[in-house]
Length: 422
Image (tube, rainbow, N blue to C red):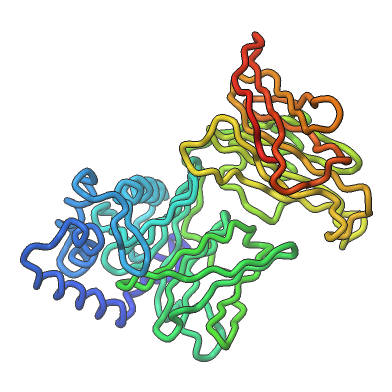
């Protein structure tokens, strides 16, 4: 059947992981009164060695499971998130309309067993086992589903002798999923683009040794490096996913000036915004070669900026600034964004501009910002987003507050208070 799918042949679970699963099973059976946390974190182990009965009970009765219990390795397992995401990945996989024999999956949903979950905003990733044989990653956003291929000793993505590491997936959202083999504990995953670099700890499941790292950068423009001190290994491109589909399509305006600006900016940026096509455009500012546009998706707001690329004359660079305020969010809050044309980035002295963006109630019609220099400024307001420039003469002064007044279409004050300048 694998020929029909054009996919790699069925691959067995690596021996070291199979032995680890069996050891976990024996330890679990030895406990006469296992706790709920043990069931949530280790039920997958019971299933892999003895069947799907226990896992089915845990997954179908999430109310009996403590929310996000420890899954080992500093990871957690949110049963509700795992069930919702795996249901969608299973539905998308089944919709392929092909038999799964050659891929190592089973059409029995209960055989897809979560090991841990990782959630950031609307993006959820589940590290799971499939059919007792495969190690997979299921990633869901509000509109998309991505299911990785399989992992196996013969599927090692490294090309450096002695590197015990498998790169299983590198999704369009910048999510990296893989397996950290023995000897690579404590390694860091570095992700680097032209404009930025970041290192993150690799936390992995003690059972399957699966890990997830969210880089939030475009895979096509990102170099991944495994820092297994003192050695560093540049990793090859990750294998393509088994499937990546839009299962809950939502589209927003991309034909108006603000809509086009938002679409172009999000597409050009190194940073990746999940569900980017679903963000409604907000206010747009274009001044002195700088462009700033806001977007909204529910209670999440994003700022996207475009400015000259001072390292590449004649070209521009775009940056994405998601709103990372913890939920529930404040109805009026500052949205932080960097200065455009900053001299330290190569801009000309005296020509930099700093946006001032504020999330406001969706029924706001007018937002006035008093920076304390000259007359108060009327910010552009669209769909719960307000945007203006900070006066040049003010600059960015730490610990300074500005006075913000928000009104609805009838002039009723919705907010009257102070917000940080930066």
